[in-house]
Image (cartoon, rainbow, N blue to C red; front, side, top):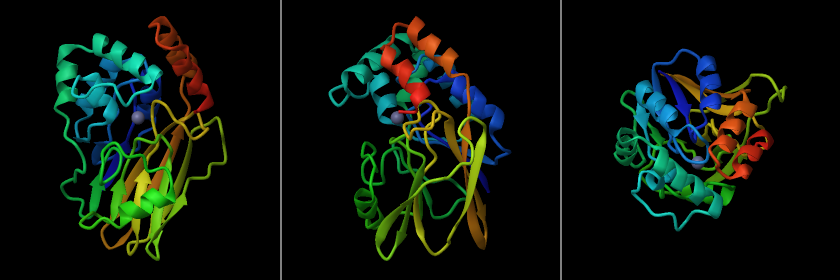
Length: 255
Ligand code: ZN
């Protein structure tokens, strides 16, 4: 099965459209959540995410922006953008976000793979280091391969000798479209983050996603992508909406 894995689009229309033009042919798509929040195109992105179909896991911004949770865990900038998103979302998109399922989810036809927004034990947990990833690998009853989002950092962890070891893609370019492919050792467990389409935070401004090809008896193949997009237009949309300026400035920094 050829699986497209996307996450943390965060209402960034320009980034999403650039990725859409770069998506390789796929059989199924999984969206790891945070469809809205931060950027200025929540309705356009909800419509496109709904039209793509596939599996969608809810994120913390989806919960807050659709009124399912309050903003107490949000910093000032996140709260301001959530408030703006609540006022801007069309009722049918709010309703769709409200009804998104909580992870972990599984995909028909894909054994031993799970999908979460934050982590397998908590949809709001940030898997930011090997310590947290090791604790997640030690949870009983979970799949060998777990795709997660939430941190906006592309890469992941491999479990060896009971401990998590980080890995991240290495690209030869910084401004062009780029991809990086690895084989996933079938005897090992992996936590994999496709990166964020709409607000990357790993120092690379290009939109990020991943592509997973399960190979039957052969080891699965994983390809990370980075796609340049029209950041200036995304920024202009943020400034025109009177969203906090920092939300626009950070896009070009990839932070
Ligand atoms: Zn997010």
